[in-house]
Figure 1 (cartoon, rainbow, N blue to C red):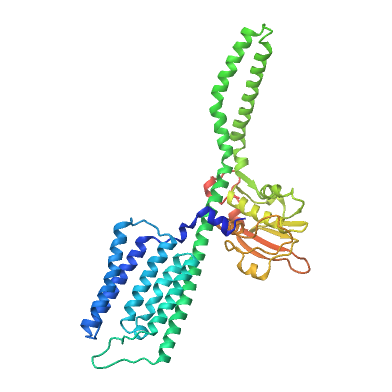
Figure 2: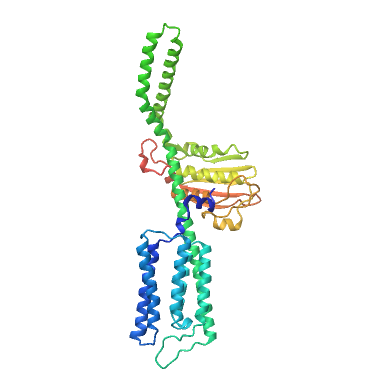
Amino acid sequence: MDSPSVRFAQFGPSSRRIRLQTLVRLRWLAVAGQTITVLIVGVVLRFPLPFQEAAILIGALAVANLALSAWFPATHRLEPKAALALLAFDLLQMAALLFITGGLANPFAPLICVPVIIAFASQPLRHSLVLIVVALAGTTALALSPYPVPWYEGETLRIQPIMQLGVWCSIASMMMFAAFYAYRVSHEATLLADALAATELVLEREKHLSQLDGLAAAAAHELGTPLATISVVAKEMERELGGDERFREDVQLLRSQSERCRDILRRLTSLSAESEEHMRRLPLSSMIEEVLAPHRQFGIQIALIEKGDRATEPVGNRNAAILYGLGNLIENAVDYARSKVTVTVAHDASRVSITIEDDGQGYSPEVLSRIGEPYMTRRPREDQRAGGLGLGLFIAKTLLERSGASIRFGNSEGSTLGARIHVEWPRSVMDVADKNDLAPSTVMPI
């Protein structure tokens, strides 16, 4: 089963790269906000303000934005180091603007957290940590600002040192909390998106494999004409050269082999025409046996318990998603079992259920609380015959739930050890209402 390193190899690091156009638009928003704020404070409120220095800092951000827009296409995605450099520039520009307008006494001081939050939401962790260190250093520098906060002329707004310390602690704690929250949400969203993409790839592969019988029938049909020509030519050669000892055996072999090929193609065509319905529809017992068969060769006993009469079992259409999902759960149980896996199948008029139990160590409480999440940690095991409990289980759970199933994970009750997985469908989802005449598109297939 896939691990995060395998996922990285499959999907690459592009999901953690920010688009340059996104950063440029955020910067223009910052330029507009800073300009409006300076004008309101200096022109409307008439507070004394270092207009020249503020204009230089805001202009520097605008010029940098224009340069980036001119040098790179809008679709360009930034490498982590480039994104770190740009976000560090934004942070230092904001810190400088706050430094000359009162430092931590400025009510806009918490805005220094914005570049850090963007970094943790879009960049690798090690680069983001560098930026938060720079932000904390900048926040500390703001506490040492000698410039007063813009206030009414003739009055000075003095902030006591203890108050500045409180503001510093507030900004630092908000920065770290928001950064951690943004990173966790972004990271989990990325993992989920990659896992769902892998799920779609697995489902497409399973559907492709299930369609190979149709491709075989098509190949048989296409090969029929040239093979018939070969057979006719072989008959003519046998009639003309049958009396010649040099060629008689070779000609007879050529004709017999061509006839054998025609028989094989006839059987393939007949299988597609006569048994298509049989292959498309699958009784519950046949589906279970098809899922279990590949896992009986690994030294683990697989016991099948059927609770219900086969005469009344549901019959549905073949579904690659269900076959793969159940197969993955069985494989996981076999990997972790000591000696035995028990599969219990039950059905009645309203439901169909499959319970998979193994005699291994079961799920630990921390794994059980997070089971089904992509790339989760594995449960305890005594050997290392297979991969950990991770993306494969997420794919199986997702595919089965899409088919209409509900899944419960737990451990066996009582003195029996081992994991227990209960999968249940409504009978209407798994059964064909009219087994003699029903279009494939009107049922949820097995």
